[in-house]
Image (cartoon, rainbow over all chains, first blue to last red; front, top):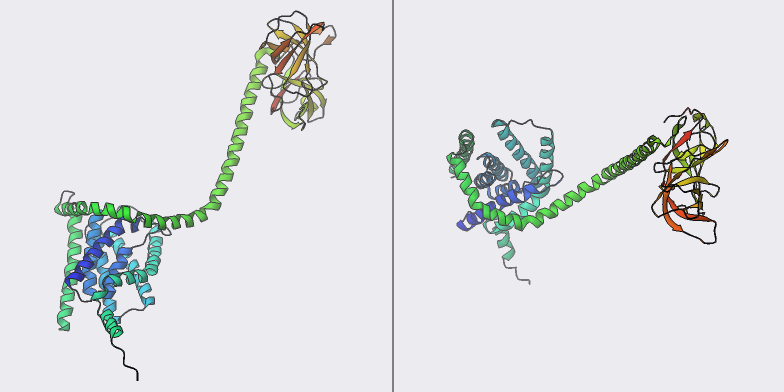
Length: 183
Length: 289
């Protein structure tokens, strides 16, 4: 991903919108007793498309904004989404461009990672309440939703940052190349 | 070049992780009036109008998703809720029945404890278990019989007043002929005038009785109460003890050609809707009150 000021501005707007939408909309949705973590999937997509550094920075910023909007422990979501963005970026850098199946699996796995990181932070900061088994069920359902939504979210994010993607530019150049003249 | 990139990446990552952990730690330690809380409040305040607009804008999407989810859940809950509704309906019906029965029994007890039960009479409470299916409603079957001390010709009272008399018994059941039956005739007195006559049914109309053989010129007015007369002359006597309410005068007419006066009355007892009655036994019943 080529980070021009325009692309950075797009990413900033996208992340702000997704953070707000996550807080006011997606978190209030009820899907099989859980809710989709779209902000996490957007960060994951940016990590997959832009690499670990971009993913980590975008993840940290988005997470910090969510923390502020929720008026909760600062740094919790920031650390979580930072981890997700970094891991997704590292996957792209080490393994290469993921297939659709890998995107779905990775989306589900990183959603589970996000849930675990948040849980670890909550436990680490001394949560007082007893933790029920429903937390596990929620984590599993959230991961499945993450796996299901990973591909559409990746496609949408790709649309937003398409002009900055090196692969897309190569593809675009290939498609616009002049055809050989037929004999 | 690549090493430089890796170093930069690691440095940024470490910086971000350190920033996150520092924020977590500082936020956890500081009070609500701390600078981090303040900064958080400022950011939240700045974004709150945008959040509000976004909330309204995305509400249809949220509602749509939740509608699917609720519909899915509702399908699962439907059978369970239907069972619950059926159970609750049964409970309600039982409670309403019990409530109605309790009210009727209470009224019945009040009536029989009001001095209308003569000495030597034992009231036996019975449940109406059978009813004539015709519009006449002239007989009912009760769940007390000869083994409970019920005998033929025993008077039967309902919660509001006289119901009829026992005409047939088995060990465990009895047939009660109501005062609306064509064969019924009860000597009665109009209160407060004291005029006496015979209450007979108006065949075909269970809501209307006739008080016949009233002495001509008796002061009868609508609304006056009619009770059993319970006369006794030597060996001949009424089977009904005196003072049991029968009904109230609804229409008083004077027919010039008749030697006696005839008036119409409505029975107090709702003879079509009785669940409990009391049989006034005089033979030492074995049944309960």
